[in-house]
Image 1 (cartoon, rainbow, N blue to C red):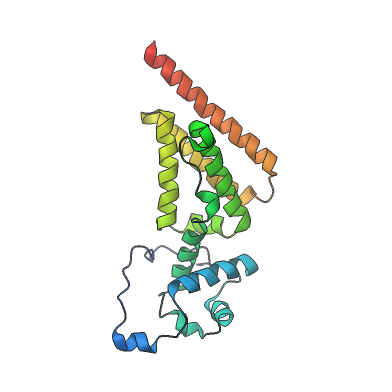
Image 2 (cartoon, rainbow, N blue to C red):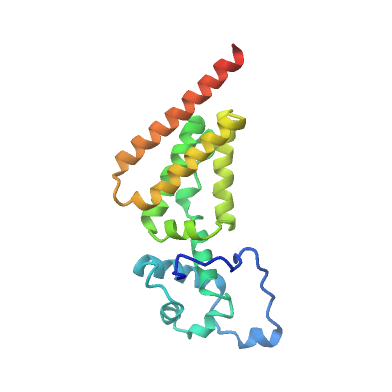
Length: 213
């Protein structure tokens, strides 16, 4: 069965399908006061208030004061809106930090900021974790997040299998935050993050030692 968080295996991502611009006549027939940005904002608000399982186009339209069919001027499916909302959440200020050398603490400080920002997004929007598992995460904000993580991994100086392993460990750590973020105290999360970073730092040191030996 396909659920709200499960788009099934046949649909394409909203980010991969170019929607044709409506003709002049169709533009005049479109509901006034609506656009994709406003609809996406309302989608995020509704998901925050009611959760993923209760989300529907009808409920969204009621909140906007329009008919459900009006929404289809701007998106093709409900899953398109869920993808748009997911990427909107990943563009929040909490995830704009996390650059190499952030706060003068090098890549460890940047990674801490990025991980804490991601945890904050998951805490603020519990629906992000299941949608991240269901959709390809290729919107502009998701790509920016991935690029920031890649820069941090580059800054470690690790290469080859060591870099791949460190990157995989970080990704799995962040993905694991999804189901536990509301059950795990922030102090415990920060401790686990410190352990992860210490492991990467140890690998960096060991790799440097082996290189100079």
